[in-house]
Length: 271
Image (cartoon, rainbow, N blue to C red; front, side, top):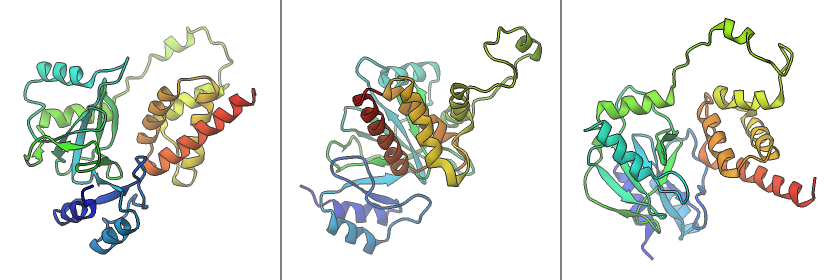
């Protein structure tokens, strides 16, 4: 096994914010959201305690185009090919690695002065990881291999515009007259729990103090309605992305997993 700590120190010296990730899961072993990068002494200490920890980089100065091919689902490689045919010059050669499940990740420098965040489903099978509290596993972590030795290049303006357009979809108001002609199942002003769940996808999880509880209620509400767990996770990620101060990946995953286990217990008990 390669000595990962030496790679972590090398990445840190190049200005990257490194994270130790548990060997069996994609969970950070330290708190990191909105915190400064780990120091050299902190890196040595954590890898001494967890020598098998994998290595990740926070997407602070760069963003990642994350391409996956899902079984019986979206093919990110075809999506990228189609996008590039329609938008020649948007996807340019840059630092690239393959992932543990046969995916591919393209690394680009973030443009100065533009706020970028995570975009789940930028294209079918393609996500964008760009929030400073996002992270990506990198080589030589198990399953990850650099495909070239290129530097990260600046992303073309057209690519940035496409991503930013997706992360801030514009809304066109409906003609108020059309609303009066709809056949409502509920009285005007009455709000169903299902309606509130849909609104959270757009409005986010609320203020900092109640985000975890809001996420738990959101996930629990959808699972209770027998929505597929993978769909629930995608919707929850969108709601989190639309939150002014999104939960970091570790906190999100922990809350989500807790609610899935709770739902499994409920179903096992026949409730």
